Amino acid sequence: MASTAASKPPSVGVVTQTMASTAPSKPPSVGVVGIPFSKGQPRGGTEHGPALLRDYGIVERIQDLGNKVTDYGDLTLDAVEDDKPWNKVKNPRTVGQANRKVSECVSKITRDRQIALTLGGDHSIAIGSIHGHAQSCPDLVVVWIDAHADLNTPLSSDSGNIHGMPLSFIVKEMAPYTARLPGFEWCQPCISARDLIYIGLRDVDEAERAYMTECGIASYSMQEVDKYGLPDMMERVLKTVDPTGKRPIHLSFDVDAMDPEYSPSTGTPVHGGLTRREMYYIAEEIAGTGRLSCLDVVEVNPSLGTEADRKKTVRTTVDVVSHFFGKRREGNVSADFKMPLPQK
Image (cartoon, rainbow, N blue to C red; front, side, top):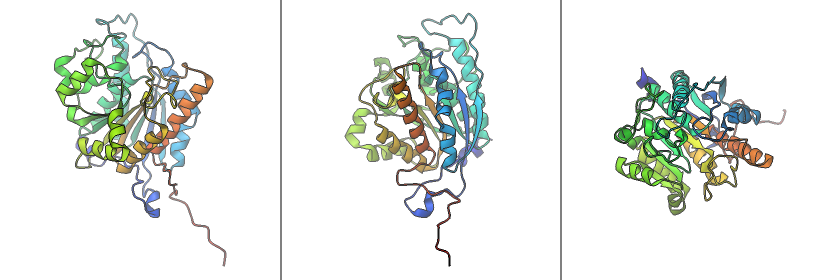
């Protein structure tokens, strides 16, 4: 069942430098789902992210690149009444219930051999997204692009915000250090620490750093980005999590991975982040593998900042996402393009 989906993950096709290769032989199929959710953190607004990304043409941009796109609309996610905190953890049942729906949806999309594009929502939705993806592609690898490690547990978190904990619920080696929350009875760890790698870290809590070291989770912080440069770093990233070059990739992209100059309308901005140009390169390299199988886009919060901040954040995000789905700065040639010739 699952091994079939994993052995031939969807492909985004555009790989080499030759003119013929700029148009994929078979356009990939993409399933888009909105996850209007903000209960994993204290600020309202991320629930409006999916609608705003659609308003700025994210679906059309992907279609225009030759991809077949099915938009499944937004999930209906209700708050659980009287959702009392567990220890300091806020909204555990609401977050757990929402992520169960996300898991079921992403599992269906990827089983149907579509690349799942999840439009968040805060980063707590990655619990369900990765869990659901792992049901259809159990040999997936996770590339987590973020300023933050999001590896706190219900026991180590100072804030109690679950958007800072998603990986602690799904990494198997984290089980001895965490606690199971009410509402999360369905969620079992589904990836190994060696199958996860970070890009862009620059705000990591002490407990998270200790967990990363203890569990052997690889990371490329902004220090390593500066040290190695993107071409060398991306080669290292892909060889670290998938030296065989065959496994499906789950990429979870928090817009705060970018410097606030490019994504100011987000809840936890941290200066010194990735530039738009650097994100283009990362996206093009991931697309070039032909193994992107699920992409989370999270933490766009249109309620934060000015109107100009909101427009900049959304436009940059849509531009970056288009590069994950085949847009190349060298130019693209569509599958149905015909060279204009002089009439005889």
